[in-house]
Image (cartoon, rainbow, N blue to C red; front, side, top):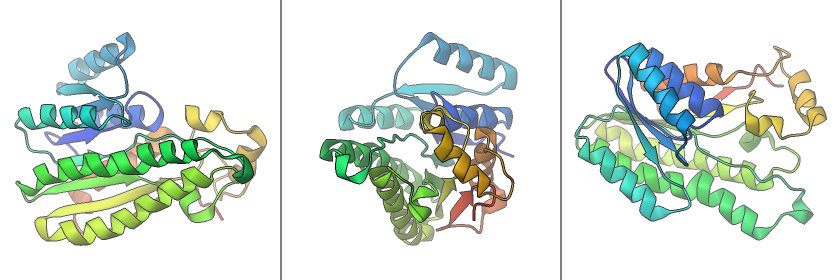
Length: 246
């Protein structure tokens, strides 16, 4: 489905991002895989994927709190001189706290990583896509942006901001052949989810039609669809992946 396409994926260290890196590799995509930090496991994983699926993966290491490092990563992508078929923005954080206990610094950091820096990174990458009049950009929102969730004011608000951005960017960039969409996962089996209270997670699962937690691979499949030509007439959309939450 993605054979010979060149895709940028952020947040590849673990969870949904790591599953997406593996899924895209399996389906023939070449990758710029973005990580917050280096580790032996990162290089081992990349070596396994490149040898197994005969693709290239260029790792990029930068912190979304550092605008200069973001720019350096973009320059490395540009110097590769390859067509950029897609950008999948997955990196994000949550700093849960009940409203009256939340710290303003935590709100600022959540927005800086979940929204501001992703918009900056996307701005750089979309300028490269404009040269080719083609591309698919995907953001990662959350069902919390729609439904709210106890203790996740800053997280939900940052993910809501991404939804608004998708609507605007899809209008502005579509004349240049660039599609912009977002995915809104529900309860997915990731390290971030495991930090939440078990009772809270079970309450959400019980409200789903499928009565189970989602898998990172299931979210990765939707990213893959949105990066492929199968979604060529889809833009400005927010796709929920929540097991039929009601």
